[in-house]
Length: 47
Image (cartoon, rainbow, N blue to C red; front, side, top):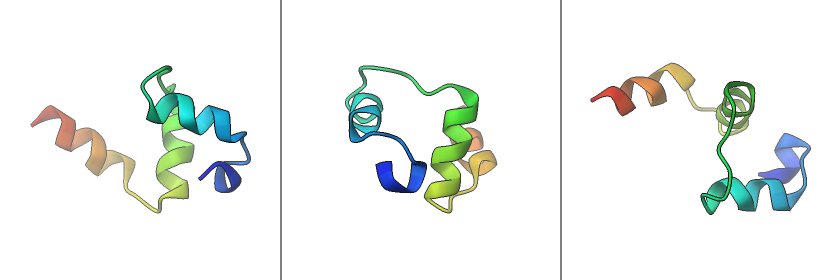
């Protein structure tokens, strides 16, 4: 994941471990790297 994002592994480890939160831009970058739909993910959080 870090390679896809062009970020250090420590960046990924910190948000995976809950040590930091993603801002909106980072969230969009992560969903794009996962080939996921950001709108669907956000909609599922509202349910």
